[in-house]
Length: 455
Length: 105
Image (cartoon, rainbow over all chains, first blue to last red; front, side, top):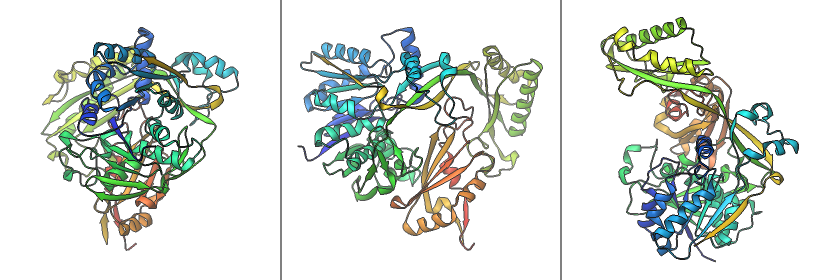
């Protein structure tokens, strides 16, 4: 058994720094590269792509990225784990295999984890007595069934552990938890029991720290943000894990950014609810047990983590169509910038009312004045404002009405208050609103599937 | 004594559906005593009047000198449904740091 493994975060979301994974595999030593690509909205976008072309439905950044990093990973024996397979993990793996052939690599094993996509199994699941009730409202999913765009179960570390045990160099999954990507290599390398709640919780906390990439190594840091060195060349976080469940959060020495008590603490509280009840498919981690020790030199030791037994359920995330929305903006300058923006808003609303347009919601905000902090914003004498951006957004069920809103905005330039600019981007276009439906499903109703592709 | 929360604490905020979470972290032990005592559920609810339209929940993480607040019904529906500029509540941690505490209360 190895005494230490180094697990590096390569992406915090799909659209993150493209060069980060390359930096992670080249700027120092690591054993695993983990990359999270899936936000809730991503699954519905990918499902739409797959509906048009069954060979799509995964993070398209992955094949070109693999072209760049695979030779290095093979040479340094770095294993790659990613959930960027989206709704087509097999198609993603086949595309990567194609890249490997182009690179003339030998001996490559890619594991594909699927079985999370239950879109075509909804009727069967309803029939078995599981209504996929909304976790927040308690409503059953059935009446909305025809509007469902995607439906995926969040698997945990287990299928990835199985993939690593089968000798995979690369693991490409569908919807697995971000934390499972990091926990899995620890279970695999250290031989942890899946039933050891404290150890699985420790690996889960490590995963939570890595899952947002640079947010744990100096990015988006509210504590003395100006003191963070060289964000331009930020090194993404790395976890140096030990068999006893303790780990050190660090980064490659020669890259920028910072790992400190504050950078780790801010990431720990990010998007959590009850800290004693951090539920994953693998365990329930107790965030009030986490101890941090800043050792200096961009090293923070994390220890003392405990947790509780996992539940009998997987979380399911469904997305469904819920009308359309559009957003547009115009910028007004001094004098009377805010007064002009408010007048323009009133004129636009009156015109839309005269047209009989119907919306579920219209929201107006004044960017540069109070759009972030609303009533908490510091009161500034209105005449002191140099400029303000009128941002107006609409949402509704009728495509034509949303489209017409987009056509009513630009005319304000010639038919509204003066000294206005900022309409270079063209008419706001309607986009689909995708709403979410979080639910639970008994674990016994879904089984992860593992497939190995070999070169 | 009047204390601006920004001077003794930092934090991070994000979204959980239509709820925003704000993790508030004190810079030292003494500051954690102060935020524990004065940054109450009621105080936060009042601070975010007009922004938070639901309940506020408060959790303690003394191990990292932090409090976690869940502000329900705050993000205009959340996710892609929200029409707000800050649909994910990313700037709300900074908004909380605007709070002034009067420690002689």
